[in-house]
Structure formats: C-alpha cells, structure tokens
Image 1 (cartoon, rainbow, N blue to C red):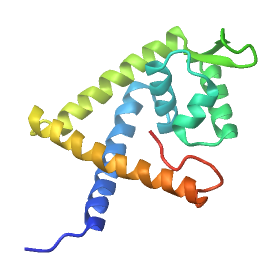
Image 2 (tube, rainbow, N blue to C red; image 1 turned 30 degrees about the vertical axis):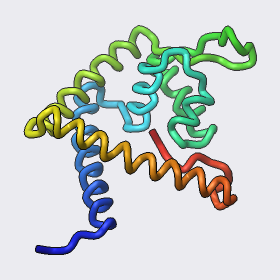
Image 3 (cartoon, one colour; image 1 turned 60 degrees about the vertical axis):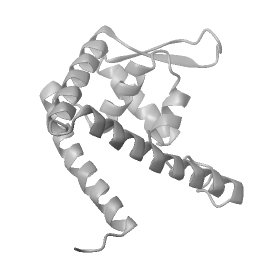
Image 4 (spheres, one colour; image 1 turned 180 degrees about the vertical axis):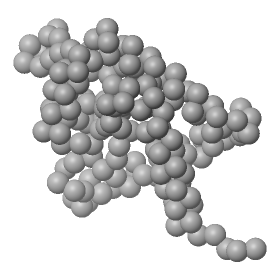
Amino acid sequence: MTSRTPTDVFEAMHDLMHAYRAHMVRAMASVHPELTLNEVRALSFIGRHPGATQKELVHHSGADKAQVARMVGMLEDKGWLERVPNAEDKRSRCLALSEQGQAVFKAMRASRQALSASLLKNCDGETQAQLLALLAQVRSNVDALDMQNALDGSGECGHRAHHR
C-alpha cells in the first residue's frame, strides 16, 4: 500500500474541483451560453443574499473592486441585475436580481443541484454529512491560518486570501 501525504489530499481535492468546474461550465452553458463562471458565482451570491452590497460581493468573491464593478455593470447590461438604493446607507446601492436574473438564477440552481446529485449518487446521506464535516474541519484550519497570518502581518496586502 502506498503511503499518502497531506499534499496528496489537496492534489485530489484540486483534481476534483477542476473536474467539477468543467462539468459546471458545461451545465451553465446549457442554462445560458453567455454565462461565465464568475457571473455564476455573483448571481448565485446575490440570489442567496438579496440586497447584498457591491462591497459584500467583493468580500465574498475575493476579486478586486474594479473587477467586481465591471462584472456588476455587465450583469446590469444583460438585464440580470439591478442596483437599488440602500435604506441603511444612502451612499451605497444594494444588488438585486431582476426578473430575468431570477429566472437565470433558478435555472442555474436547478442545474447545479442536478449536477451535484449526479456526482454524489453513490454517497448516502451519512457519507455526505461526514464529508461536509471533514471539509468544515479543514476550512476551519484555513481560517485559523488566515487569522494567524493577519496577526503576524504576513497576509497579502490586507486582501482576503480565500473565496467562498
């Protein structure tokens, strides 16, 4: 039996995510041919967090402000996103899915659920719960490392190092 290292675990996770993204790109193209992976992430975040601000989208995505601003503008141009006044802060605008954006979001969500179910078809509920718990444990270690790096001053220019 071959000895496994922690690096092997992350290589396997990387390979899995690469394969998942490839399937996701094909699935999203069937929802709408113009959808990019970053747009899927943004629409999914806004669909799950109606009224989020552009600043919250920047924080969530890990992308810089200019990239997010361009993407929000493109999503507005496509008619999928609207900026509405923020009742709590008159200087900012909240992001909301338009009627068209809601339809795209629902189709994306259904497609993602079908893909996820297909990929996990041989894993029962207990196995899925165990996998989620293990991933949460690793995620907690990543967050602790990020916190330690921030305290040590060794973080990258104050940017968040992870994407959710």
